[in-house]
Image (tube, rainbow, N blue to C red; front, side, top):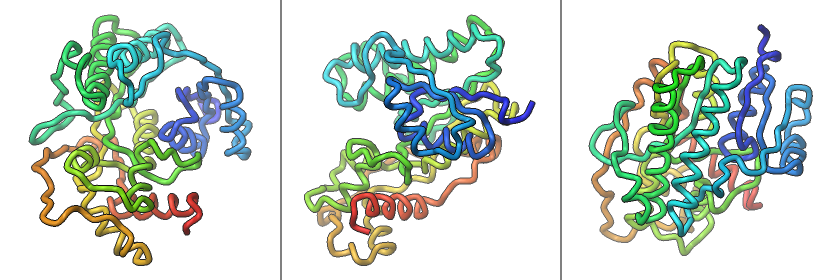
Amino acid sequence: MSKTSTVVLISGINGFIATEIAHTFLRAGYTVRGTVRTQGNADAWQALFPQYASQLQFAPVPDFTKAGRSTRRSRENEKDVLIPAINGTLAAVRAAAKEPGVKKLVLSFRHSEAGVVYGESGWNTLSYEWAKTAPPMAAYGVSKALSEKKAAWDLVEKKKPNIALVAINPTCVYGPTRIPLDYKGTNGFIAKILLDPSCELTTVLVVLFQNFVDVRDIAAAHLLAVKNDAENGRRFIVTAPTLFPTDYVRIFAAELPELADKLRKAPEGFKNPETYTLDNTASKEVLAVKYHTSEQTLRDTAAWILLVAGQA
């Protein structure tokens, strides 16, 4: 079977990460079918990649979860975060299991643990009940863990559908993209450091953004997971080594000396908190992901942000 006759379905294709995944598959010669909420979203996305028109298909899906839209900024954790995340994953796995032509399901979740050293065998152990009244970001992390474990792995184990399952678990994701800059997304945090003189590197921000990965590496991981069967039935942490936001400023100052005096530094005497370590060995040895260095990711992300912000 030629690559162009192999159809890869990518949900929410017009999102930040999904756009890069789709572009990676298109460049590799696959036919890509993307789900979108409206036909207008499909038209706008296709306009970004006219050279791949013959490889692109779209499927409008107005409401995939039937329970609202997941958001980390929700005030109702159960209704707007937990239920949509779990139901959305259940719907995806059940739909794939019913289709004879589906051979493999590669699901993207989010690493959301805390501890000392974590690898693919570690799980966020916080409960659904706890998450219902937890801070929004904490509830978001629990929703990702539950949607992977309860809605994906447990369902596949019980029903044993004739499809292979692979889970990709990235940390915070940065990187240049082909869609407009979302100032409320993860790249928006980099934009604040670069462009907002009022940005403060508080302990909370340092903890939230201490681990990250390049969006191009996430996309490569998905392609590798589809192409090879050695990864079937496994979950992978996809991340670069720990690097605190306080170190971002140092890197930006070295790479972009014209901004050095404008960058907001951590308060005098600020110390990075103790952290946990993520083991990405399997992603390198089994998936064979070749990571961008942290410096490359930050440099390329900053250059792209300054370009789209009109300051390059």
